[in-house]
Each structure stands twice: as C-alpha cells, then as structure tokens.
Picture (tube, rainbow, N blue to C red):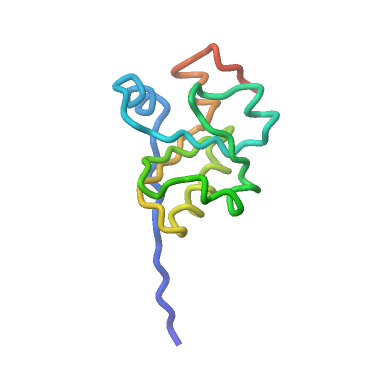
Length: 114
C-alpha cells in the first residue's frame, strides 16, 4: 500500500537578506531557538527566545500570520524548528542560513561569536 507524503521545504534566508529586510523595517518575528545561555551570550536585537525543546509547549505564543524567521547557532536546530512550525500549519517560515554565527560574521560584528 502506498502512502502519500507531503514534503514541505523551508525557505532559507541569508544573514545579509535578513539585515536588508530589517533595515527596511519589514515586520518579522525573529524566533531564536537556542538555549537560554546561548541567547544571553549573543542574539539579534528584537529576537524572542523559545528554546527548541520548549517549542511544542509554547507554540501558542506564536501567530501563524506572522512572518517568522527561525534562528539558532549555525542553522540546524532552527531548520528543525521551522519544519515543526510548517507541519503545525504556519505558512510564513524562514530559516536563517548559518544562524547567529553568519549574522555576526556578515552583518553585526558586535554580536559575539562562539
């Protein structure tokens, strides 16, 4: 018996493209899924911390109507979170390619690298 599977692909956004959108004051919800100590050490101004392991119990804090950019250290945990949100019927989800590390290297070197 064959089962159909819906394959959803997460939109990727580069740090430079994200910076351009923020500079043009596009309304984005920056969701940082790293651990609290990582967020405290370095984050993009205006981002909201919901660690990946808390996302299932805190998803109600997010609006499916928002343009959400998911952020982590290098883009792996954020990709997991973005996939989770897509399957939870969120439509406007992007993953920050290279994570906070790419943001620090290409856009804002005042954000500490680790």
